[in-house]
Image (cartoon, rainbow, N blue to C red; front, side, top):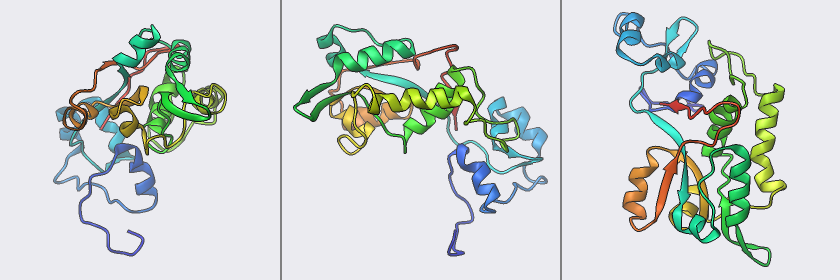
Amino acid sequence: MQAGEGPDVLNVYYGWIPAYVQQQFLIPLPEEIFPAATIESDYFPMVTAAKVGDSYYALPTAVRTLALFYNKDLLGAAGVQPPTNWDETVAVAKATARKTGDTFDVVGITWDIGGQGHNWWREGLIRQNGLVPYSEDNRKLFWSNPEGVEAFNYLVAFLTEHGVTQAGFQTDGPTAFASGKAALHVDGSYRVGSLALDAPDLNYGIVPLPARKTQASFASF
């Protein structure tokens, strides 16, 4: 795009739409071809996340839901159950992390702030902590509110305070979990298909995101 050679059509994660609009990478869907009334009658209300101002800039092609993936063997060996809230998540991560000296053999929970960790914070942890992360028109962010900062500190503490994980362990979170080297892993529902292909023998389960003030297992497209 910066070189002036962008595509005519692209598949983009909905969370990037406001930034792409601001940078003038996207133009609105033509109203005569994509009437707003038709879009809003044909799709679930979450489609309005693709609306900036008075215009739609994208349409969903797939929907995913974040959830907590857990390794049944690792949790079983530690004698713990899948966590249901924030405190239990820390406890399970501590119970399952294993090291040889300073080197992790197993991380209690994956840590990918550049991947699903960011989505977990923004769409899960922030909402679970009682805060909507951005305005209805997607133009104002509330991440720096106390509830948002507290949610971010919770995520960072796995790395800096609890010592149960490592950034980039086994390259990334999905790889670590698929190889049986991570007890807990937050990921999208599409990961089920990847694991079926790449790790057919992995003994794992899936539960809703651990809750705090609310449940908030957020869906996106």
